[in-house]
Image 1 (cartoon, rainbow, N blue to C red):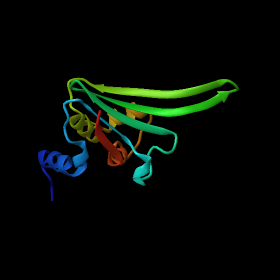
Image 2: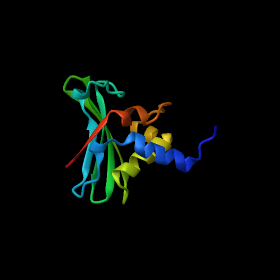
Image 3: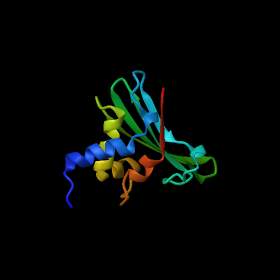
Image 4: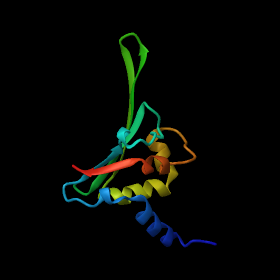
Length: 125
């Protein structure tokens, strides 16, 4: 059975975004909550934060610092900015375009953004 792509997008919107991600005029932030009991798909040393502010959305990928040598550490931080794009729309774009997610994290991930999206908790800022 073939599903029309517009039906797929509508289904994603209803299934993926929980009620705690309802729209807010002050913006929202979505991030992994270790107290949720769900494992972080990025592991223990990396995380993604999605911030909505003034109509745009910034998706930030960060890794905790790694020691390179004595008194030297390396931190990775990459951001994707979706200008004039609400947070929920940016999440759907990331789900549908694995290349954007790969660019964000810096490597090809066959599963894409979906596993991370499933463990994000959103709240008003």
